[in-house]
Length: 271
Image 1 (cartoon, one colour):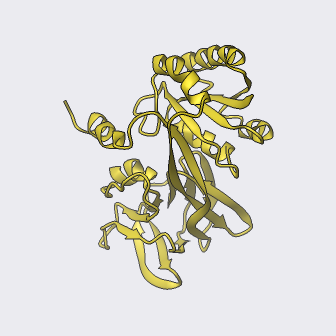
Image 2 (cartoon, rainbow, N blue to C red):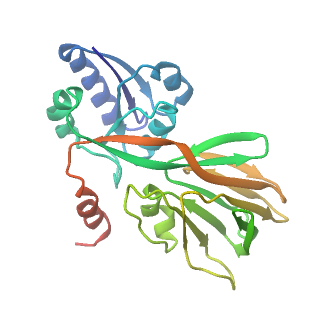
């Protein structure tokens, strides 16, 4: 009997209803189930050990929470899209009901995605599937970000901030800031400044072995954002160290491996 977890977006009524429906179907498929709001990460982590499959019901934000809840076991996740973009999700609600038996039977392929590990003084480590952003706070003034790679100084960005993104995150904030799109299974790290002033503006694609240190200099508020969901206030002089995480996020897919490219065109190219 498989142990299955279902995480859902608590503010989307349809997500809660679908989660309850799927939970009701699982016993007839010889699977046990636990159900939890994706926003209650501690509660989810308390139930996740021994789980063989997680259904994430919501959008990409729900998947980011599911990915953190699945650590360190890297349990395969099936994303069911009830959000807007759904770059990481796999199925519609109708497809989820139809394909549930096949997923429980182990059919499909594993799509493994790199994550970032973030360390801040005595806090962390934190892990991000999408990106890490060091930027200004509520006041609209630039911050200075001293950037080193593998101990070698790169530059001091005078900018709204700096993004470090995974391949998965390359279609998010980094893309909006003018960064490139990496193929989904890439393990390289993207470094992209946000609106730099009289400074190097191009994105850098760093190797998976890179260790990046960002040290902020500011006379006002600065923030560190992890996957856009964990926000930490920074003081001038604080340093953030980012490298590839030892953990990965694993998706169980039914669509062909090339589905990413068609999804990209559907989401980003105006019709």
